[in-house]
Length: 455
Image 1 (cartoon, rainbow, N blue to C red):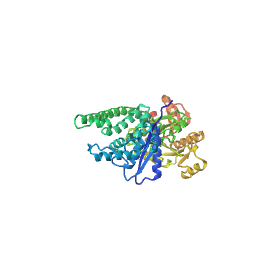
Image 2 (tube, rainbow, N blue to C red):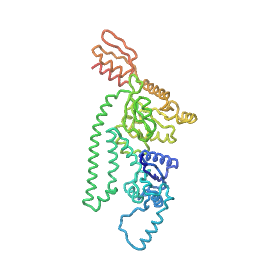
Image 3 (cartoon, rainbow, N blue to C red):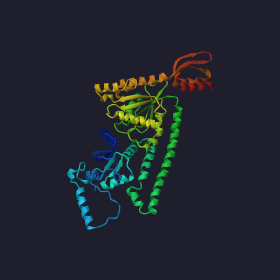
Image 4 (cartoon, rainbow, N blue to C red):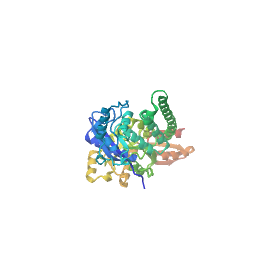
């Protein structure tokens, strides 16, 4: 029997300029993130404010409401010595009675302590002191959006490179929160030994990050060497929002057994495979890490080498979940991240995926919204749609190829295999001195072949 999933409460402050629709979409996405992390969302607490409350994100009233759900007191302790007077004792007793709501009126509370939500997830990036105060007032663990995403990446990282990248991001997230952690509070009492202990912890984290970066740099040098070996090959990168269907398209186009799951961030490792059936020259398809709104900058920086697949591709396939009502906003997030890494100038093709979940009217609306020259409405599960996409990719590269004649003397016939791998051979003639080939290829590949023949 599987153990019960832990329970969580979502908290969001609706700031000025954020519409109700945007807030609902953000909370729905946060709910999916929390579910991917292994929690069930049992309650949501929202509040309109001009800014996050400096002490504990939400105001006093909402803090008490939140504490009623989690079983906390709803009060942020000041940390100052308490003045013990009869009047103060009476006031504290009355306030505690007001805070303690009946168990059957607390949404998601469940009655028994073990049934109460153990985690509060805030849909904002919050400071360490805000998280600590919220924990003290509610008695629950507190994560912000960045912490949730970092934890998901930590769970899903499979390759050594991805694990190193995620560990760097996780340590960068943890380091500034040491002082506010329960252990940190114990270690900083007074100055001197306690303060030195926290600094020692921070120094260990800095040293560990430096060590991880050295290991990551060695792996990236090997990756750069492999990239250099295929720099003049035909390369396509699948980019898009997390769970848009990139891995499903990767499997359909290449026949590879890459992981396909209906989860956010199921794929963190870049996979490169040849498109099937193979073309001459080969077309390489790479799957990349998915994007998400408010993707932490540390993760963007850590996965920079992975995202370089998009930067160095000849064609980007923007994969969008057309069945998601927020797909336009998701597409803008993808474009924003690509602008951040300097890949906005790479030619692209928009793929409105998961069309099998749309009715005829919705498909027609998508086609009117996006002219056929800009987008393709398809399903990765439809072999006919995948075949049409394959033809579109082949046509894109053939449009960039130039035709040229290459002469390979008999003394260098070993180069013929490289010619066939790197170019499309239109015709082939033999004479007494060698082989004369008319080929179509990208200019960079032709330059490399000419250099090999003339060397």
